[in-house]
Image (cartoon, rainbow, N blue to C red; front, side, top):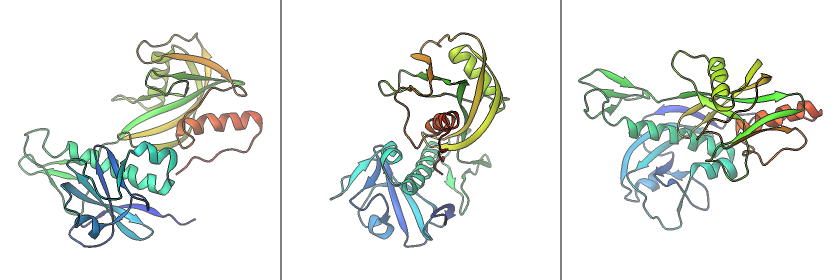
Length: 276
C-alpha cells in the first residue's frame, strides 16, 4: 500500500502546495477538511507567527501556518487535534499530529534558553538556531512506556482522575534520565500500583502528539504484590477478566491496541492492527 504522508523539510519561499492553519484552539477546518490551498490561505490576511514546510501528502507539499491567535474565516471553524484522532481520517490525523508537534517546538524555541536572544529557523533543516551561543534546538520527543499487565485471563487496568468518566486504561509513564524503557516500566508500575512484573515483552510504538510523546508499548506478566494506588495519580485500579472489561480508551490509541491484542490472543480471535 502506498504511503500517502511523508515528512520533509520544505522551502517556505516556494509558492503553492497545501497548508494547515493552527492556533491555540486547534486546526482550521471547513467542509473539505483541514487541508487548504496554501496560496488561498495566505490571501486571508491571517496573523501568522511562523511557517514551516512539513512534508508531502499524495506527492503534494504541505506547510504549517501557526497563527498568533484564533481568527474567524467564513465557512470555517477550529477543531482540536483529539477530535481528529477519534473521528477523522487517519492520514489527516497523522499530518496534523506532526504539524502540532512542530508548532509546539517552534513556539517554545523562539528564544534561546541560554541567552534569551531570538532564534531563527535554519534553512532546509528542522532546527532553530541561536547565533551568539552557536546553539541548535531540535524538535523535542519525550519517550514514554505504556504497559498492559496480565495475569492469565485477567488484565490490570487503572483510571486517572483526568480520564473520561468510567474509562479504564493501561499504565504509562515518562522515562527518566539514565533509564531504559524496561527500567521505566518497572519503576512506574511500582510507583502507581505497587506490584512487580516479569516477562516484559515489547509490542510496538506510537507517536502521541499531546504534546510530543513517543509511546513504547509493552505486555508484562504479574509477578507479585497487592495493588496500592498512588495518591493523586491513580483514582482506581482493578483486575478485570478479558470477557468482562470496563469502558476502554479510543480505538486508535496504543493503549487500546495493547488491550485488544491480548484479549484476541487469549480468546482465539483475529489480532487487531495498530494504526500507523
